[in-house]
Image (cartoon, rainbow, N blue to C red):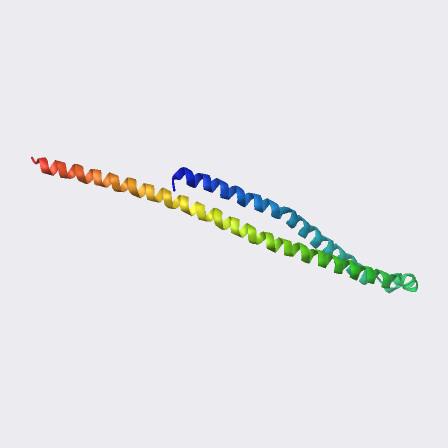
Length: 142
């Protein structure tokens, strides 16, 4: 494979990697949003649980505290299910990202090996030229 072919292949694999990585970003945004919502719900639930009992008497008479707990539990459950779905999508997309990254890295290694092989050939040719020159000088004698 020529250097130009390797450069083209490297550009293509890098572009593919970047495209797949970009597809992951909305999933990460969804994950952060859901985790933030869960944290907010947990914080509100904790605040509600730590209210002084004097403030809860009217609420308890109306059954509001139980309604709040039920709503909070249901909301938490729904958020966790949605987060689980997002995490499954993320895991699937991450497998694609890893594969694309591996391909891009393999092509980068091939490029490095190609450059090293060219340098080795160049060095070998220069050494042979120097040796030939040295032989011709010793053969012509003083």
